[in-house]
Length: 375
Image 1: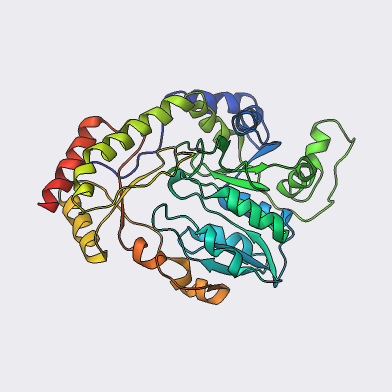
Image 2 (image 1 turned 90 degrees about the vertical axis):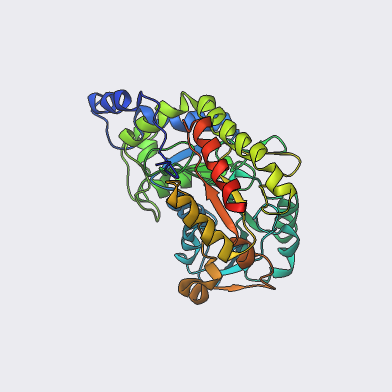
C-alpha cells in the first residue's frame, strides 16, 4: 500500500522528547520551543515567531491582534480549510468569499478590490500547495484601503514569493505543523509577526491574557491578567519533535522536491495530450512541494481515477468542499461575484501521495497506473 501521507520522522525525535522530559520543562516555552521560534525568525526574517498549538490558533491570534469585531468583513477564498474562516467567524466577522484563479487555485487578486466595503477589515490570502498568491497586488490594495493582510501559510513553510518567505509578507502569517504538513509536531502551528509593536500583545494573548512571558524574562517581578487571551502555547515535547525535523530542514525539502519533479516530468505527456492539467508555478514563486495534484476532466472522471488507484493500493485524495457551499459558509458568509472557477476546479483536483522518504519506485508505479487509466 502506498499511503497518501506518512508524517515525517528523521530519527532524533524520541531523543529530543526524552531530553525535554529530563529538562523538567514539558510545558510551553522550554528549550525546544525557543529553538523553533528562533529558527523560523531567522529563516523567514520575521520580527517574531511564536509557536502555537495549531495553525487554527495562530489564525485566531491574528484575528484578535487585528481587532476583528462583530460586523467586520474579511475577504478570503472559499477554496480553503475551515480554519481560515473559523478564526474570524469566532470574532463575529462576516466572511466574504471571492473566486479563485484556475491556474494556482489561489485567491484571484483581480477580484478583491470590488468586494471591499466600508466594513472590510482584512484580506486573508491562502497560499495553496505552497505556491504564493500575488502578494504585491494584495499588499497594494490593502495599503490603499487601510486593511490588514493575514497570510494563511499553513501549506507555505519554506516557500517564497519574490525572495520573501510566505507568512512573513503580510501583517501576520500562520504556519501549520500538523502531521500532514512538510514539517510536523503532530498538532501545532506558528504565528509570524512583522511589526515589532505587535509582539508584546501577541505574547499576552498566547499566555491566557497574562504578562507571564515578561515575568519569565525577568522584566517584571510578578505576572497578572492584563488582556483577553487563551492557551495557545504548545508543549515543549511537541516542539522537541519538530526541532528534530528542523535540523534536517533542507533534506526533507529536497526529498519532497524530488518526488514533485518526478511526477511533473513523468506526467507531462498526458498534460500535453490535454488529458490532465498539472500544477502551475508563477514566475518569482518558489514552492515547497507541499503537494502534487493533477486535474481530471471533471468530477466523474476524478472519482473513477481515485477508485482505480485505490484498487492498486494507491492512496490518492481530494479535499476542500468549497466553504461557501457548506451550511456554515452560507450562515456566516457570502460569495461575492461569480463562482466561475472555485467549484468547477475543486471538483477536478486530485492529490497524489507525496511525503518525506517516498521512493522513486513508488512514484514510478503511481504514474504507470495513471497512464493505464487514461489508456
